[in-house]
Image (cartoon, rainbow over all chains, first blue to last red; front, side, top):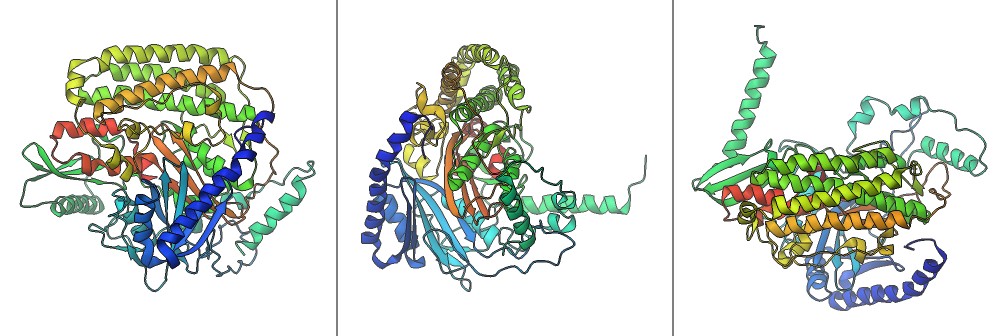
Length: 236
Length: 391
C-alpha cells in the first residue's frame, strides 16, 4: 500500500513493488519444491500478500516447512471459512417482496478451493517481513484435519474456537472442547446456515424506515440504484 | 418480606447446580482446585481461571472464557461496512479508536482507495492517543495488583487529559466511531492542537511520576523481577504481540516494520525492547511506549499537513470481491482483520485477530510452578482486556 499520496512518496512503492513480489514468488516456489504436489493453488497480490493452498494430508507438513525452512516463525491466527452463500441473505430484504432464492453455488476465494469449508492460517516471517496465508480444503463428509499443535503451541485455542464455531475436528489435539460456548450448545454459529435469530425475530430497522437518498451528486445515482437492487436480490 | 416464587426458587437451584457442576469438573486427587474469577479484579472483566494447586504452588492453570462472547464475527456478516466500525469499537474498549483503523484500512485496501494525508495523520494522532489512554491505565492497574493504590488514582486522573482530547475531536470518550472508509468523519476542532500539546506535557510528567513511584519501588521490583519469564521463542510460537513480545527481546513493531499507510514513518521515534521477558520488563516496555507515543504526537502536531480529510468515495459503499489482511500495532498488541468480500454492501466473513486472545493463551504455560500471588502479577503484566479475548 502506498504510504501517503504526497508526490515524493507515490513513486517509491512503484520501484519497490517488483522486488517484494519476487520474494513472494520465490516463497511459493520454495514451498512447491519442499511439498511437491501438495501445493494445489497459490495467489500473489503484487507487493502485498500471498496465499497458498495445500492438500489436507500435507497440512502439518506445510506448517513445519514454513516454520523451519522458510523462516515463518511467528503464528498469527488459525480459523476457518464457510463459502456457502448465506441462505438467509443479509436480512435486509424488503418485508413485502417475495423472499429471494439464495444461491447455493460455492465460490471460493484466493488460491481456489473445491469444498465448502476451508481452514486457513496466517504466519509471519520477521526476517523477511513477509506474511503468508495457508489454506486447506476440508471435505464436507469428513470434517477432520491434523492439529497444528506440534508446529505452533499457540494454535491450541484457535483450533478449539474453530471446532465450536464450524464443527471441524483437529485430530491429535489433546483437549478439544468448546472454548466460548457452554458445553450443551447445539449448532455451529459461524456456519452460514446457522441463523442469526436476532435478525429473524425483529426485522432490521434499516429496511423499515429508509429515508430516500437526497438527489444531487451525480455519481450517487447509479450507486443508489445498485444498492437497492442488491438489497432486493439478496446474495444472488 | 415478599414471598419467593417457585420460579425464583427454581432459578436459584439451577444456578447452584451449575456451580456444583463447574467445581466437580475440575476436582482431582492431586491438589486442590481454586477458581479465580470470573469476578476477580485482576481479570479485567470476566475471565475465570481454574488453578490446580499443590499448597501455594500452581500445578496447572486453565483460563475459562466466553463470559463476554458477543459474536462479532457473526454480527459483521449482517452489517454493512460503515456499520462494522461501531461494533469493533467495543472489542478493546480502552483503546477503541485503534480498533477501527485496521478494519477501515482493510476495506480501503480492497476498494483500492486511500485516505488523504491529513486524514492519515489525524488517524495516527488519535491512534497514539488511544494507546496512551489504554496503557496509562495499565500502569496504574499493574501497581494496584502489587498492592499500591495511589498509582491507580494517578493513572485515572491523568488519563482524563487524553480522553478529553479524544472526546473534543471525536465526540466520544470511549467509542469514537470516527473513522470512515476513505478518511475521517470530521476535521479537528479549533484549539485542539494547543490543548493536546499541553496534555502531552502532563502525560510525560505522569511517566516520570510513575517511574519514581512504581518502577523504583523495592517491593514492586521484588514482586516482578524474574517472575513470569517468557523466552522469545515461546512468545513467537504462541503469537504474543505488542509489548509482551518486545519485553521478551524480539525487536518487532508493526508501526515501524509493516507500514500500512499511517504516518508513523514520517516522524522520529524509537522501539524499546527488554531482554528479560519477565513481568517487570513488560511494565517497563509499556511505560516507554507511552513516552514514545507523546513524542510521536508532538511531532505529528507540528507537521500536520493541510488538505481534505475525506477521499472521494461512493455514497453507498460496495467493496469489490477479494480478501485482505491488515494488522496494526494496537495498544494491546497486534490486531488484525481478515476481510473476505463478495462485492456486497457488507463483508462475507471477517476474522478478527485480537492481541489479547494470543497473549492470554500463554498463561497456562507461564504460570506452571509459580505461587498464587505471582499469578496475579503475571496476569496484570500480560495486560489483556476481556472484550479483546472474547470478541
